[in-house]
Amino acid sequence: MFIDVMVIYLLLFIGVLFGAYYILKAKKKKRLTQLVAIIIASFFMAFGVKILVQPSTMLTGGVGGIALIISRVSAQGGISLELESLIYSISYFLINIPILILGYLRVGKEFTILSLLNVVFYTLFINLIPFQLGTALHLDKIISQLDISILAGLIVGFGVSFAFLNGFSSAGTDIISMYLMNKKGSNVGSYSFIINIFIMSAAVIIFKDIPSLVYTIVYIFISTLVINFIYVRNKKVVISVVSSNAENLAEELLKKTKHSCTIINVTGAYSKQLKQQLTMVISYNELRVITDLILGVDNTGFISVLEVRALHGRFYLPPIE
Image 1: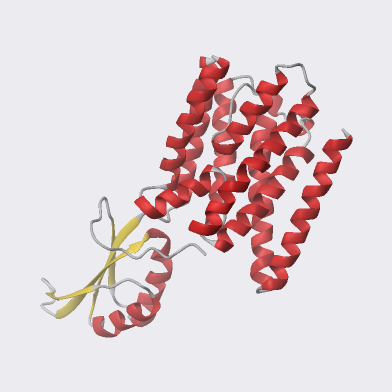
Image 2: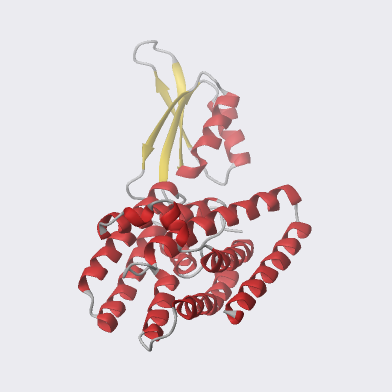
């Protein structure tokens, strides 16, 4: 128990140290907002794992799944629940170190620093959130393992998505998935799902527990759906604008975005008026900003948006900081 408390205080010290340095280094308001986002995201992830996953026979995906495998293998020797939780925390933190180095070098420095803070706060919450909180919230009355896996997937999936939306991750396989997404395309959740399947296969070989594997896959599948639904960085759309002011509009768009556009002359079938149609491929998460920009230049423009199913050729994706 003494070691457990010392680990908590050490992680708290690291979190406060990094947090203070990060706030003082740049814009305070932005950094404070990001730190609040880190606390929210790490709490949701830790809550889902501590209250729903750990009491069951399920595993999480990614580095958390590997850490759970290590702690549960250690628990077979008859260690206490507190020591098992400590082994999980230490394993989770240590495994993340080389992955965070990869993220710092290949994904983005700011992204990785924020992800490191998220790892610290996640590890803290895993140790600080009591199992009794689930009882207080009447979650212990959920008997169906299927319901538990779905609820855990929703909660943890939201936490991971919230992290991505605010410019960081839960580290681990999320950083690996982000790296692969930037290199290969596709959704970050899809890469996470593939990586997690390999981890689950290892769990089956070690524990030989097929029912738990099924519920774990449900949990991972639900969390992947949530991530792909909320975090749409790699989703692309075509935005088309019919306008009588397309030249000025194109100039403004080229100035404010890194995307090029195409302009063609069109004629209204009813009005017979000559206008121009501007077409541009953008990321889905840029849609609101670009729509506002278009309406700011021409509030009478006719805007339509179509989802891109496939894209071949060069496309600018803003780098992760």
